[in-house]
Image: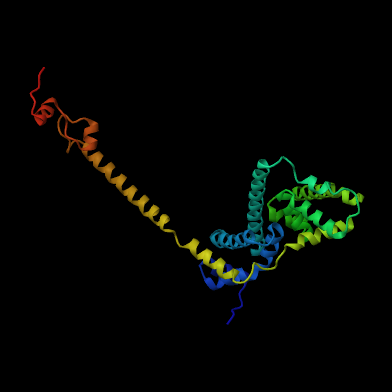
Length: 187
Length: 103
């Protein structure tokens, strides 16, 4: 039979190692964390790993949890930081692979399409490439602000940066996407 | 840009999932349990560091006792006393080897 758990009660019980409380916490927040992590990393092993690690780190940090932020905010913050680490690792790996092949960067892949008529599917493909080429910090802002429609303040809180940084990162990310997409726009 | 904004949102949503898949909770709990229980290496390290601390304290106590003079042999250097070695003199050295010391 399910007990009516409050968030405070769940956290207190989980901090004492109560497995039922831990299960409730994971089940309650899996959806939100999966949404953010898969938007950042795509579905797959990395996302699953980050998802599990997010909860484990949260549970291990419970003795220091003071409840100054909601559990979901706290979890999302951990998830985003772990996702950024994975994105940074991916970029480093990609950098090494490029060193072994050619010095080309991401942008030409998009620009090479040119201003000719491109249907919606092609646009989608090109935007996908442009988004994938975004700096991880810019991607995080784009995901939180545009996809999850979070406020600047909330995004700043989640990323642990000032609101001004969120605004400048979003502006730069959109400018970068717009620059990258310019040939498509002209078409 | 409006249609591109829409596509951008769609592209971002493409990879989005609302769950990590079946049994995610079980896998997470398993991982959490494994982290809670200290590994064998951690256990050995913890025991080893305690034993090392006790050993060092005992060695320091013996060294202080020896240096204190009660257990010290006449003619023994500080290093010899610390290590608990008998003083090595010419007589002892030649007596042990059976040779006669010459001057």
